[in-house]
Image (cartoon, rainbow over all chains, first blue to last red):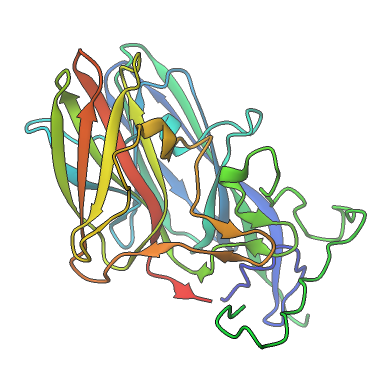
Length: 149
Length: 185
């Protein structure tokens, strides 16, 4: 399945792909000072072309790691660990994205196609000391394959 | 657009978007899939009707981070980051837990090419944004000619130097957002 990422307005491309706006959600309630996993599974009806990431949280003292399960590729990559004995628990969530209402949705700049049915593992680590409710929202398009277009 | 051929005819202007936006119903287009406004130039990478200004398709989005947890007061620390293969830099991100007199200064150095990507160490807030307010690499607006920086494909390394400007210890994160791989347009 191919896509034309440079033309979001194309209703149907020559290859028979129809782009339909889609929003995928990852939720987690992270108990104080713990790590909480959460899985995002791309719906199996279509690949997902990811354009924006938005996030809300109770406290900004929350770190995020994202891993593409099938390829074991880390989206958030710990290049170097300077402090010995301190695990890298990910990026502060406010460095990743903000809310849409606050004009803070992060445009990922190069739209990425997430294959249908693929799982993306999220690890949320709280350091606020109280329960942290977090939501990540992936904005983009479902790339629906149609016949006879 | 090839800027090397000064004698060549100017490139054709991009097609103008429709004066009035179309209806969402039956058009199967997302009118919100743009981020190209004068309100926030730093994150304007999507143009309505054209897509991304970054001339890459298919890359894997990646945040490459280093963390100083914690860096002592007035201390300087360095980290050598082994970069992922075929990484193209699109912007910097940073935060400091203590920021009363500026947080920290940072310097970025491409080890392989021996290039400083910062002339002098700037205050982190002047180079590294947040998820809500990033600064993507410069672009000639309207021509989709962003200029992302691609590190050496294999075994690239970046040397980061951080100077804590605060008298107290500081939890510092700084990183680079970009894409791994992909195809240049």
